[in-house]
Image (cartoon, rainbow, N blue to C red; front, side):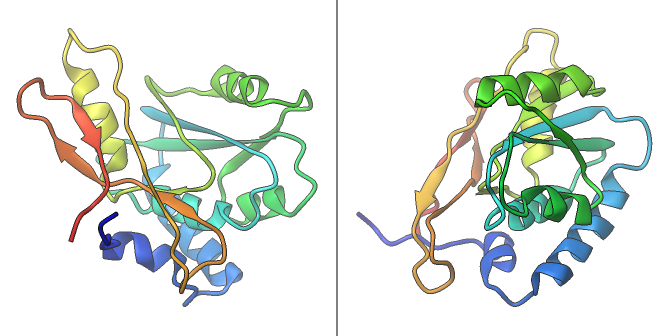
Length: 185
């Protein structure tokens, strides 16, 4: 296994330099910027007991550089921790799905999504600064109806107690699709 270099865009959300309140406020301010208007993109995110991960995840999505109006919908799938309160502190819509399971949760989010483009996201991932654009730009082509991504998983022992996943992008110039892979030094 080779050492990995974690991009600054990722570390800013996981290095604990902000309190939960500060990170929630940063996410709220950034989300107000990308969610102003009728959404073109809906990001649907099921969540079950994600209080340790949800704020960095939402902060990374809200900080995305995009020209599109975005709504983020977190589906609380019966969390027994502070997941819902933390989501609400960011200004992101949070709905409850009482039937347990990711399929029920994702489908509940899809049912209320208003965007032309729907992105499925995980509640424990830090997203690249341009993830929304990378996922939606190929869909503007008439012959493309689906994009997908891969993720890298790493344990950042000095910054967090739990493993966290992050994505980094590169462009495949042969077919124009977006791929994701681990960043090497």
